[in-house]
Length: 477
Image (cartoon, rainbow, N blue to C red; front, side):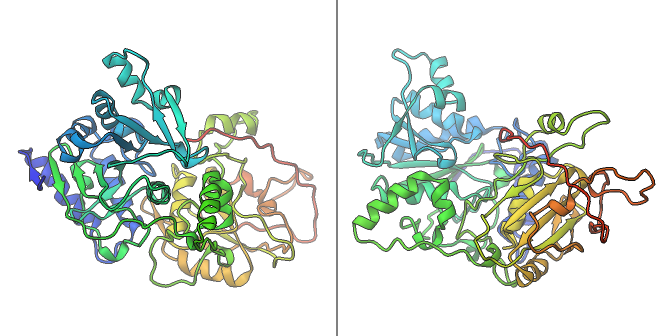
């Protein structure tokens, strides 16, 4: 099937052109493009629940109609097994597969418990039953896991995207799961060079993307399905050749158990499975930057933003009301990497002027994009600040250079060295609430002050007990 365009309202094509122009600014990074697309969709009310679309695969209006075009692809009629990502806007594609009585494979969320789930509708399923099976809850209730030894042959893969170009270059939300899933399927022999990859997006998500941004592990697409068009990209950029073990670190191996199994199998087959040794502080020297996809699922699953407790309200209650910015929130402290024995004392960077409404996941994506991933991140969004711990002064200096000019939601953040540096302190300890020991204290403590730029300081020579912060695990947003 060639590229085709159906008749569409001038406003839609105008939206697409404006979004493409905005996203294709000279020297734009992947993060720049994501932000432009997310902002544009929000500003023009082009999405359904969940909102806002930032740090998500947008559930755009018209997604179901775009998904229905999956059946127009020639490969759809001849394939028996179709892999469709679990994103909300792809519910229509999952429904099309089930209605056609084909085998539907859906990746395990965040690859925590395996690679695939096979959806098995109830016997004699009605159209409504199939619709339920296509939802995220249905995927949980009507699925069985597929092991690595299963004989799976996938001819069609349907993925979500934040942005995609007519040349087939794709940008996801920055966590790298679609890329990793495809690489795993290559490793288990489930896909090959003839496998077709399609993405479903709004017209405004079709933008210009420089080939320079696409790396060997990035998944490209063969077809783009929008509410108004079916585009055959003719992409010649090779798809991921398999798992590139030199881009996987031990931390990622622990987070995705199936990787351990695949690594053992490939090691038995005589392949080089040497893992990546993460650079100091998880970053490289400042300079021309692209998103550090060498570790697409870096352990940045940090704390949820906690609302400032109202008078008389406990921090535990405030945390429950505050929602989630990530998986496994830990009450203001996010452990990113364990500190090795004998490692040099950490150096903390203060990041101020964080605007209201920013989620911790947005900051984490920005840190990945700027190649300034810290050892630990202490999130205090309610106070408009965060603290980033790096492995020594040199790593902190590189991070400061990389974060210069960082802007989120049109606010330029203020990175600088925290004035209080304690070599062996527990990260974030210097910034916690102190006990009230004097009614005549003139300076406000860090955790009850809204900070827009000034670094946090400790009172000299006075040691006061630091109360242990109440923490709890919060559900993902």
